[in-house]
Length: 430
Image (cartoon, rainbow, N blue to C red; front, top):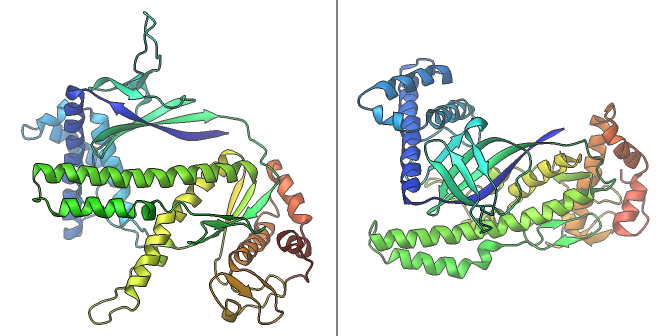
């Protein structure tokens, strides 16, 4: 099997190379904005949108004109990639179910990126010692920029396919995408489920609870301090721009803490489990504001805003996305199930009632009296629902790599699963 990976490193360009990267990013933004304005005019007139092939012809005309002839100074591939991304974003934006919405015009300092799609033009010099035995910087060759130093913090394995250069918080980064060929691995014969929460990031069916990182809450005082400092400065002044960059780097640090924690957690889960079941949560709906409108104002707005902030601080969507591709790399699977009533259904008798949750951390069935931690009950229900779903959908799967899973599921009766999770025998759920 062939898997795709990306290695992200920090670039160390000199002043001349930084000026070139700034200029080429401006070229890509200009091409995007001109093409987007053209497509919007066609939509207003009711004319069909142009596809990438037609937009590429306009790019050729722009590069040959006197007004936009400066575009020839930059690599054409990065400008073509801007048109390809715009073409994809336009058709996705016309889909009402697409959460990203319609594409917007790009701004300097916000959308600074270049994509180099041709692997033949990307060269790597990874040697860290020169002929005299002195340490040197690893370098990457970017078309019309030259050899740029970068901080190689990991070994690069695989065949280079493309590279993307981005600028964030005043620093330049390069993401090198590679393809790696590997044999189909046999995943470990273990299954589990995750109940996502705010007090506990995840809860497993056996009762194991993992604390959330909550990086935003940890840096809340520091963030408020930096925000007060920028509020006292004259807008768009030199000191205002400096403080804005400090604030952006603090936000970047918070995001890095969150990603580091989630990467370590999902790697551990993917290495030790072949099947993981999660709830198919609609995070965009769950974190929607409760303000309402002027005619129909919302209630408990402050409490709902705090809950939304806590949910987003945990990074549930990022955790599920990381877990999905890491399981696929190791031959495992991620199964998503309907989240309705997972925390209200009794695992012993199957009775579903909101009264089963008398308070936040406790589950107590009003029918049979079974009591346990509510998050553990939710994880158990998610797991049993995922096992039933896989039995129904994967019954006719002929792939030899999932033979262990068929054997595992066939040997797990509801009674045995209940005893393994809660340590006590009980009747099979209805």
